[in-house]
View 1 (cartoon, one colour):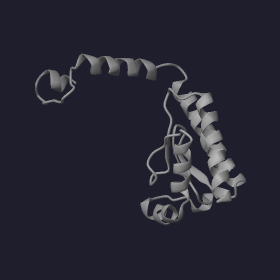
View 2 (cartoon, one colour; view 1 turned 90 degrees about the vertical axis):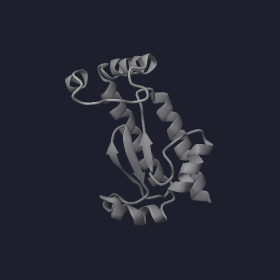
View 3 (cartoon, rainbow, N blue to C red; view 1 turned 180 degrees about the horizontal axis):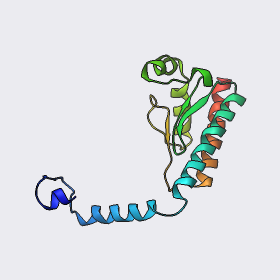
Length: 148
């Protein structure tokens, strides 16, 4: 930042120095420094991912997940087929029931990334109760998909 204050590097932006934005940044940094925050997000994300895979298997769908705790992707394929790059993901995505899964979750009040991503994102605001509600929606959706 010294390069900016001395004028050696130009730094501009619509919201730079805006007091509301600066306050939001400060509040966010305060939250991110709370002890255990990232560990809790990781624990909740892994619980959600692992339980979703269990529920998918119970409903008769192959499933696995990739990612880290609060940011993961659910794949409707066996673990040994999990994609490792974009090219290996394409055939899985083309035959995936994820669009129906996505729609079922949306109908039950669970918002996830758009259909092509299979991406789930947790935040520090998510609680154990949120995870349980999501898992209930996942189970209902998978059971409906199985019977369709």
